[in-house]
Image 1 (cartoon, rainbow, N blue to C red):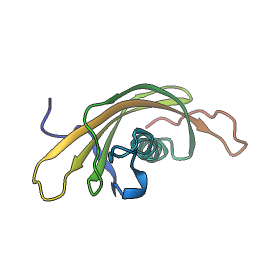
Image 2: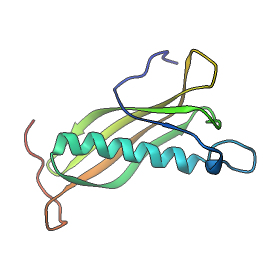
Image 3: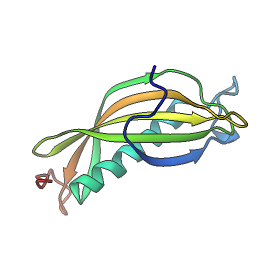
Image 4: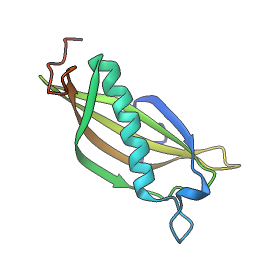
Length: 126
């Protein structure tokens, strides 16, 4: 496994006790939500407009996220189509009092560009 994240750091947030499951780990759905937020930020920056999530093409949970971990989501644009954009993401954590980052999740999300009318819109050239 890579020791360094791939992509641009897009968001960082702290995992809080309210986001835990009965075992004390952070819910996978919370992590997925943070990745969706990060992916949409990356997509909006590239599209220069609104986007909506249309698919999660791949998602792998590698290690648990614990309360107090700083979750860092790194994004890179993998593909830009006529109206859709694919963002590959990695989520890493910095555990409390530990110097090394740990990769916890990776995924590929697809967004569609939206016009002012809320319908699919063409993505401008880079």
